[in-house]
Length: 186
Image 1 (spheres, one colour):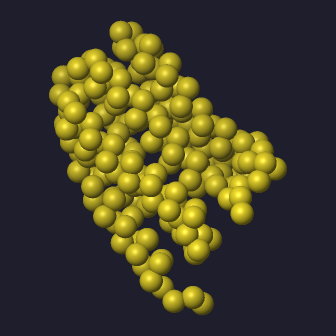
Image 2: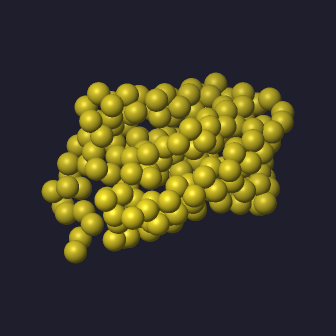
């Protein structure tokens, strides 16, 4: 049984909120080429931050699609993965900090796949709805890249904050998932 038919996929991709969410991926690729121009880099990062706010507004106004709650955070994860891997390659970020930053994102992606394949898929999909802690992690990640874009020293401080809140958010997500799986059917 297909998780998503071709028609459902096209409907998901026609959603204004999902299009805006997915726009963060090419924005990350553009940012990689602008790292030497701090002003343009800052503007691209700010635009990415703005898309994260606007897509949520459209989802609330027009109604979220079935997979919208998964597309939005996956777009965030792809955006940050591209930026953080670029920082690793250019020597601005160490391996251990990259792993800490991406550990939560990798965990959430794997758990999203698990949720889509789980027999309680409908209930599990609701876990994709962002928690306050998850929003704080994303905010910390955006602050980190905006801080980096300004060229000010010490952006690692934001990276540490994002990593620590990311670990806490992973634990919270795992606990929510456990409650959903073990809750008796109603």
